[in-house]
Image (cartoon, rainbow, N blue to C red; front, side):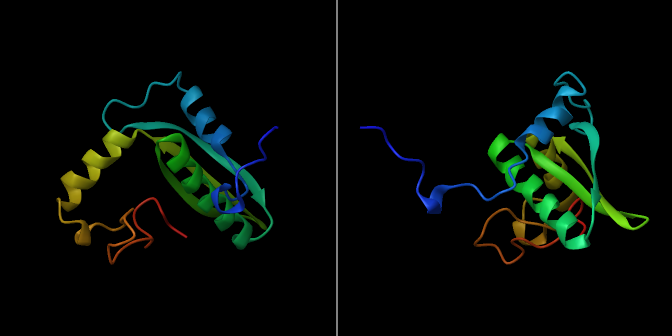
Length: 129
C-alpha cells in the first residue's frame, strides 16, 4: 500500500524558493566570494505590494534553512512595484562574520536563529523589512 504525503504539520510553507538560492550559487559556479562567502545577487522583481515582497523574503529565509545556506535579502521599492534583492551566503562564513562583529554572546547578535533567545526573529543586518 503506498504511503501518503507528509502530514500537514511537516509540510513546508509555500512558496518554496529553493531553486532561486540554487541559482544564486550556480551563477558563480558554486564558488562563493573568498572573503565574504557571498554568492551572486539576484532580484525577484515585480511584487505588487510590500506584503507580497515581505512574503517572498521570508520564503527565501525558510528555503535557506532547508538548503543549508544563509540568506541576505532586502525589499526595495521600484516605482509602483517592489523588488527583493537577495543572495545566498556560505553558512560557515556567515557564522564567522557574526562571531567576529558581535562576539559569542548571542544576546548581542542582531538576530538569533534560536527560539529560546530574546532576540529571536528580530530584523538584523541583511534582514531589512
